[in-house]
Image 1 (spheres, rainbow, N blue to C red):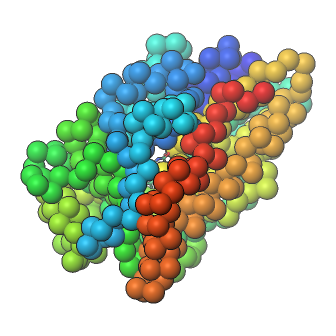
Image 2 (cartoon, helix red, strand yellow; image 1 turned 135 degrees about the horizontal axis):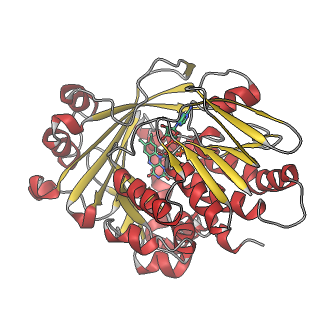
Length: 403
Ligand code: FAD
């Protein structure tokens, strides 16, 4: 089959690799002129690592990544520990794959290098997709420079502002969730005694939270700080580039009185590494398909990053979609429907769980914090197995072994 893909993010690149792995001819169209060194860190949970493993890319990803010893939750100001979920070998034993932290640029590099090695001419840069048309036997993608390409299936992996989604279901702006995310990296050696633990640590507080972890063999510290700044509203004008910069004073004000691990990171980050990103969401769709056109990743189901699963869902989507379009003797629309049936409920559940974490992480009163974090603390101390088990549905899922 000839598979056309719009978007060269984690979703589009993985979709291309999975389709190629199944023996399809792939062409990927990315509007930028190169894959850039963008943003900061990203977590690759075991459910996504299983797909990288099936593609033979897990070792390459691990080479430049960092394997945290645990996931922990702490109070943002005092640093008091709430619970710890051991990772490392325990993650591998329980969920059959490691949990990694990687720089987004390194992740993209692993994927695009692998794609260039197996399909040298698959990637088209400066290829801005604007529309598609289709008939019973094929689908054609149109670019803004007048070129067009015809294939059997068109995958829209063009992110939260997907042009393909707009053509499929009409214009509807993403919803600004009122949350701003700070993202920054800096050498661990610059943080002295305040270097973050070698864990994935969520720091919770009033209307905000932070996440600290390490990258690149543990040498680089990564911080994501999320602050609620307003109501959810439809607003397409907030900055949404992985590389939009913010001011240090604002970040320090947002995390005033927080634990020195957090404030030291903000003080130490290089000015050109202080990214500020508006967090958007969309209401779940009932369908991701229009004939031979299909959505994947953030184009289909953007989500708040409060469960670190947005890219992981795009990776899972990619494997399932490639599997479904490879089954014999089936019309394309049936294969796409099977992909959608397989993925819709899981992605909706993960999206809802990510939203729910906003309430959990951002409790504003002492009473609510006690009611929320108290039972977590208790479970973590008297029955840690329960805390582990609660993550099985997410990290234990293995799309590479589904029938
Ligand atoms: P995108 O990454 O948005 O890629 C879309 C691509 O399409 C881009 O390259 C774009 O240039 C291209 N494109 C767009 N329009 C066109 C067009 N018309 N023509 C051609 N090309 C086009 N997820 C995790 O799994 N773990 C994490 O730890 C995590 N942390 C996060 C932290 C933050 C602060 C945020 C904001 C998100 C986080 N996520 C995380 C979510 C994750 O980043 C996204 O879910 C993921 O990047 C989506 O990938 P995608 O390929 O679907 O879309």
